[in-house]
Length: 340
Ligand code: NAD
Image (cartoon, rainbow, N blue to C red; front, side, top):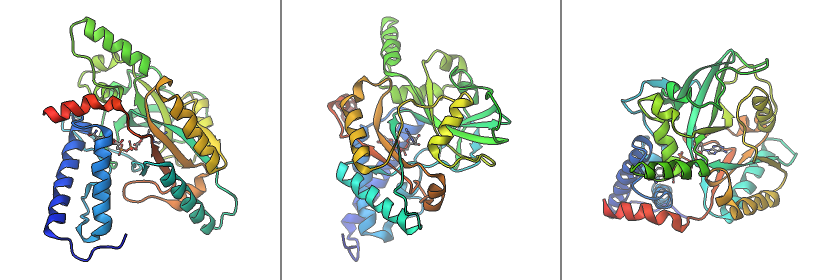
C-alpha cells in the first residue's frame, strides 16, 4: 500500500487509542498473568497498529509497542540483565502469508551467496512462558523471564523447583557461560487434573494453561510454584561463546545430551511443501498434543545464515510463527473482557 501523506486527526486518534489499548492488554497479560481479551483479539489490534504505522511511518515512536518486545519487569522481582537480548517472533496468520515469508527469506539467503536451499527447522509453538536459564560451567546459576527482552525478572528460586530442568549439566564440552532459552508450560492433562483438584477443594480453577504457567512461575513463594505441574522445552540459545555447532538442530542434540529437555516434535524440512504438510498434520491433532500450541515456528536451521540475516528491534529475520486460526475456545475470555 502507498503511504498516505498526512495522517488526519482521526487516524492519529485511532492510533493513540490503539497504542494505549495494546499497552493495557500487554500489562494484564505479562504483568498480571490475567488477559483481558483473547489472543486473537489482541493480535487483530496489533496488526491494525502495524498497518497504520506502515501507512504513516511518521507516527512510529521508538517506544511504540511494535518496536518493543512486550513485557516489563515487575517491582516484585529483582531485575536481571540478559547476556544476550531475547526477542519475540514475527507472526503470519495465513498459509499464503507464510509462503510469501518463506519465498522472501529464500531470496535473501540466495543474495547472501548461499546457493543451497535452506533447511527449515519446524517446531511447535508452545503456549507457555519464555524463560532464560544461565549456566556457568555447567551449573544453573540464574533463571529469568523475558521481560522487555533486555531485562527480565529473576525467578531462579521458582525455576529450581522444576525437576526437569537440570541444576547441573551432564557430560562435558559446554561453554563457560551459556544462556538456554525455552518455554515453561503446563501439559494439558496435568492442567485438567490440577483444575479438578482446585474445584474439589472449593477454589477457583485457573483460566488456561498458558496463564497458569506464567502465574505459577511468578509466585513470590517457591513452595507454591513447586505444587504446579510445570515442564519446560528448550528452543534456543542466547550467549554461547565457544560452542561450535553449525545448525540449530545439531545444537538441540547437544543440549539433549547434556540433560536439557528438548521437544520431541521438531523436524528439519527441505521445502515449503513439507512445512505446509507439517502445519496441516499438527493442526489436525493440535488438541490431542501433550501441551497447548498457538502455532508453528519455522526457523532457518543453519546458524551462519541466522547470524547473517540478524534481527529487527523486535524479532529475528530468520524465523516466523504461523498462527492457527482462532477457535471458539476463546469465547469464555471474550465474555469476561466484555464484562469488565
Ligand atoms: P509470541 O508468543 O507470538 O512469540 C514469541 C515467543 O514464542 C518467544 O518469546 C518464545 O518464548 C515463544 N515460543 C514458543 N515456542 C517456541 C519455539 N518453538 N521457538 C521459539 N519460540 C517459541 O510473541 P510474544 O511477543 O511473546 O507475545 C505475543 C503473543 O502473546 C501473541 O500470541 C499474543 O496473542 C499474546 N498476547 C496476548 C495478549 C492478550 O491480551 N490476550 C496480550 C499480549 C500478548
